[in-house]
Amino acid sequence: MKRTAFLTLTLLLILLLFMPLAKAFAYSPATRDEEIDLDWLREEVEHNFERNQVVEVRGWKGDSQISIYHAPSLCPSIDYPEGMPRWLHWLWNVWWYLGAPWRECYPHQFFWDSCAHAMVLSHLDPELAEEEIESLLYAQGEDGFIPHMIWNGERMHWVDRFLQWLYPSNYTSPYLQPPSLAEAVEHIYQESGDIDFLKRVLPNLKSYYLYLEGVRDSDGDGLVEIIISWESKDGSPEYEIVYGESSAKPAWRGPIVRLMLKHWMMRWDIERTLASDDFVVEDLLFNCIYAQNLFSLSRLCAIIGEEEEAELFQERAELVERAVLEKMYDEETGLFYSLDARHGEERQLKVSTVSSLMPLILDGISQSQVERLVGEHLLNPEEFWTEYPIPAEPASSQEEGDQYLWRGLQTWVYPNWYIAAGLRKQALRFPEHREEYNQIADEITIKTYQLVRKEGFREFYHSETGKGGGACNYGWSTLVLIMVGDMER
Image (cartoon, rainbow, N blue to C red):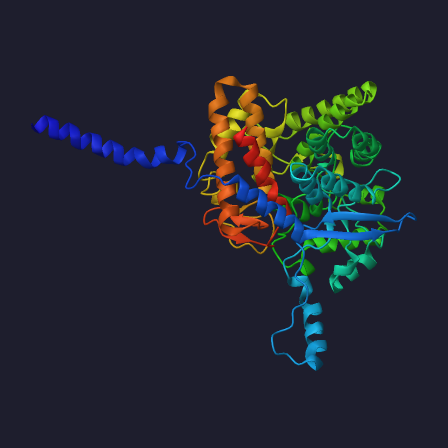
């Protein structure tokens, strides 16, 4: 009897000691608090696009075009307090105009956002998705450059007007965003089969990706450079090593605005900007998306019989992918990092962020690299496996608040979509992990759906509480519709 009691007590002690450790590293399959209501989700997505739709006539290139696009988050129109006398409306208008820059909304057309919008719209209204892409292409320069932002002239506040004066164009910005354009067009074609649309836009796509290769790949290794963190993840902490200070401060006194003023003083000359070495980063997220989109572009060329160009972009995609996998991987930590490319060098910016998981979308990543990314980092609750994954920074980062973008415990739907899709891709490549990786992708999808169900389409969400942050009715968070579709398939 005593022996049995002793063994029982010993077993209980062992369980008490090792349960926390087991909990920390064990993966449990997704559990649904509620079934996914696909009809509800589709209806909400459609309403969100209706709220953010913009129709405008663009004519600055000589030929007028009616452009239809969807802003990330339209600001509400001015609303006078009930009972306010009409003679006081002018004062309310002044207050509204002065306070506009601090309202969390994005009324202009943004490149990365429009690519996401087009992908989602391809499942709802392919013709409207085509309009979204063609509205972006209207702003393309003769050299192939497509800006990260096109002004909505009727919704500009006084800070916008200052930036408009500062920028070299009155209609667009001088910066880029992650190049998701080819995969957006591929999504549309897969849903619509519209070969005329594909033939119409493909020359623009080729010109754009050739611009990236010719202008933003200074050393010819395949990796393109960004010249300001606005071109990728805004205030993400990995860029602070390059800035030499934290970007977690108000924009007007932060490093991003000062860098932009330097670009203005260099007359927005891209060669001078790159040569200045103020900020030159071979960005991990940007280049993973770049590689994936070159593969998409290759497939699109093949569809219309352009075999030589299909081979050209295939080779370019493989070059970029190899460079990411060889130069950006750190064997010691099992993570990938962006590269500080100033002064002709390539130094890893060893700050762990959600970008460190983005190589999961690559076709050529090795099984051991995938296993380390998933097993040691994605599923680690001290890093990225939070209540509502995947945070911008590891859970242990201690970053508080949601005032600054792409920091701390902020879960963003765009990288969630990419990483869930990447897991499904790796599940196909490595059959022994098929069930596991698909289950993880399912859980990310379910958790993302739950965020949208509880908080609506927000700019980002708190990775532990699920509370929505930033702008409301945020367009790219509708990517959850594609995530759910991938899971159902």
